[in-house]
Figure 1 (cartoon, helix red, strand yellow):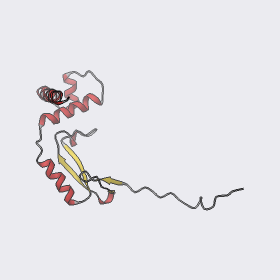
Figure 2 (spheres, helix red, strand yellow; figure 1 turned 30 degrees about the horizontal axis):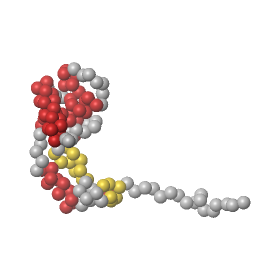
Figure 3 (cartoon, one colour; figure 1 turned 90 degrees about the vertical axis):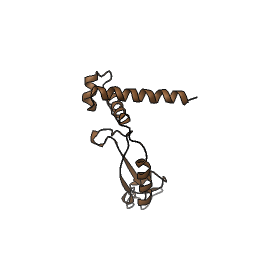
Figure 4 (cartoon, one colour; figure 1 turned 60 degrees about the vertical axis):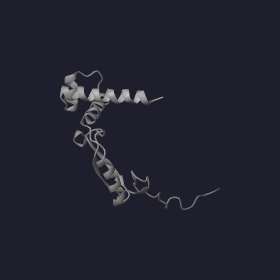
Length: 133
């Protein structure tokens, strides 16, 4: 009869939490991460509206974080894009067929802002259709 020895005394090593650098894609231990938020009008947080317009970025070092931060600093912040992101969250995370008042309640936007967001989104879709083969 075969018997395995030493299995009971061995413990599996706990996995070390890791992060991925948003610039170079290096994987490194979570405790070494340099991170923060940068303004980004395309970012709508999944559950916390107070983080809308902010993108969490992670880097493997201060220099890479500065490169990422500077890249976002030169990107225009388009308010209608942020409003469209809020609408997308509201329309994909709850009931469909919302009225304008219900959309306003779910997004915190006024009707003119909702209409501007829809117009901005529709124009982006038209631009994409013109450039897609």
